[in-house]
Image (tube, rainbow, N blue to C red; front, side, top):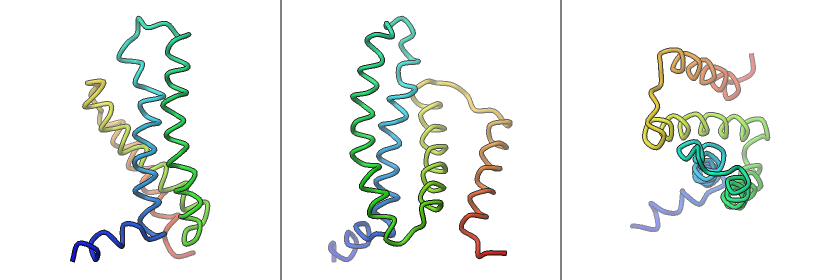
Length: 123
C-alpha cells in the first residue's frame, strides 16, 4: 500500500516539482538568509552562500533533466518561478519576520496568472 503512495512521487511528472521545491529552499537561504545577519562580513557570506547554492544545483539540475521527459523547458521554468514565490513568501514571513503587503500579493497573483497561461491550452 505504501508503495502505491510513494511511487507517483518518483514519476517524471511529480518528482521535478518536489526537487524544485527543495532546491528553492536551499537557494532562498543562499540568496537571502544572510540578510538576518547584517553584521557578518561579505567575504564570509559569499562562500557560505555558494556552499548552500551547491546543494540547490544538486537538486535543480536533476529536476530539470527528469522533468524534461514530460514538461517543456518553459513549463519547468514556470514551475520554478511559482515555487520560488511560495518558498520566498514563507521564508520572508517565518525566517526574516518581514510582512508581505497587499502589493506583494497582487504582484504574486499576476505572476500566477502568467503561469496559468503557460499551462493553458494554446489560444
